[in-house]
Image 1 (cartoon, rainbow, N blue to C red):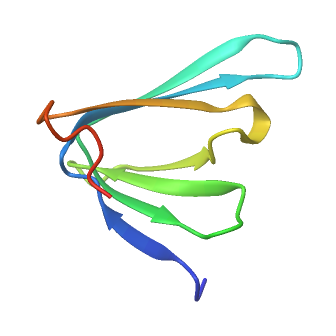
Image 2: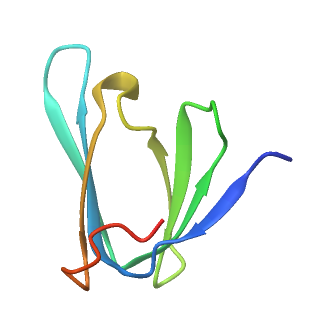
Length: 81
């Protein structure tokens, strides 16, 4: 994965991925205290690592009905990259 980009998201308190499956059922993935985001431009997934070192492979927003929400620790800076 030569194109893999690593981004610092340690300013986020949490992030939530809402997915819609083929039957229209919603499912959420909640990640507390995310610290790193790894993306592969043009890919359909990305990875998130939380404060405890747990890793998550998530669909990219808009892929497979994925919707992303997050909250930063500093409400004056809602996005850090």
